[in-house]
Length: 139
Image (cartoon, rainbow, N blue to C red):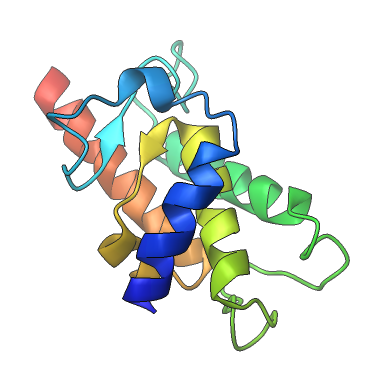
């Protein structure tokens, strides 16, 4: 599956217009996850003290992206639904969904990490972890 993803992803990226492309350089392309801080503002700036707000916001955005994906729009998707087992996505569909997440949050997820993201909850947890790392760096 890693081999298939390493071939399919660059081809799909070549034919899609990505908002995150200008923010990715050759030097940081292989970082675990590259974030664009301006696009990754997921909490209300007036309520910095509330950590639950941004966590819930990230989960809602992840679910909205999943529901917007045409192959999942009619399915009964929940935060714990497995993309392949419960929702019937194949590896190409999974790659497309991960690319939609990358566009939504302005980041790039490496293939090895993308394979581990099999549920919307896994994606939200990864994004929350990255957000918390950014918040620690800002402090």
